[in-house]
Length: 122
Ligand code: AMP
Image (cartoon, rainbow, N blue to C red; front, side, top):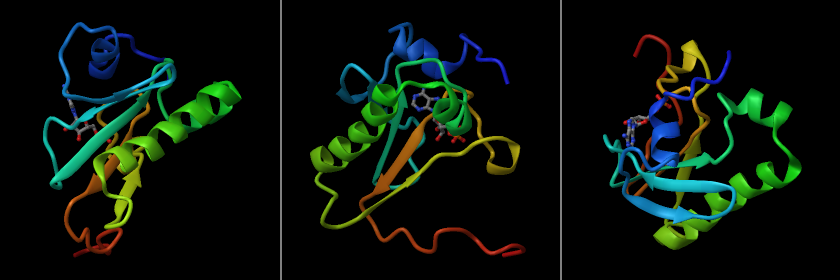
């Protein structure tokens, strides 16, 4: 899938629409999800134009890849959830209901998060 520069996270990265920023560095921006599904729900996005994890791992530089994952770790530290626990998740494609076509890692925390996935049919 070609990258669409009009997606909402591209606009946030360009400063065209606001976000509640948690962390920013050379490689990544982290901000609170506008529709949180847990007491802590933060999105960590790479600054480069990548649609998905497959696009990112195939086409990003090692520095960009390390930068995104280090940012996820820093955000967990900064939010104080390393001891209590947290979940990271990246949706890709239709079966995962990816809504925004710019790679993003969700970080959920702040309550017991339950089973990893709902079983089919439940
Ligand atoms: P996904 O389904 O993995 O693509 O998740 C997209 C996420 O982006 C959802 O959890 C939305 O609530 C979130 N989202 C959409 N627009 C914004 C925005 N302007 N600021 C912060 N989060 C957003």
